[in-house]
Length: 165
Image (cartoon, rainbow, N blue to C red; front, side, top):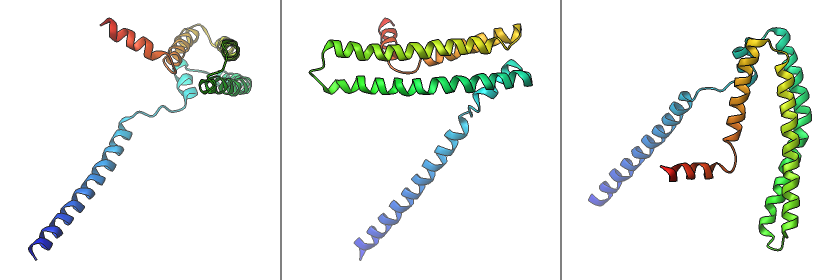
């Protein structure tokens, strides 16, 4: 009789702890989400920062649409080329010439993307006045730096910086 009472209390206690834990997890998740600022639409942020006119907005959006029509197939090709390149990891017989050719293909796609992106930024810059161009140049530099911080290779920079401390 005494052991069933202890067992019942233990089960009830575990049930209460589980309920409290679920509430804690759900409540904590909601608080984290509410603290994270919403990024919003990048175009609207740029438009606000540059104080674009309606004509500039319209022109910028047209340029952006044209840019994405050109760049999307290249991005798809770049992804495929990278996938093919990194699939060679499992092929221990892949020669250096195959690896070099595959790597060159990736570099060619990336180079084309960079050229088109550069020309797009230059073209968009042309629709702004002097003061807007200065702000636009700063925004472009921030975007480029942010893009540079994504992807592979940063572990080297980070580990080198830590080693130098």
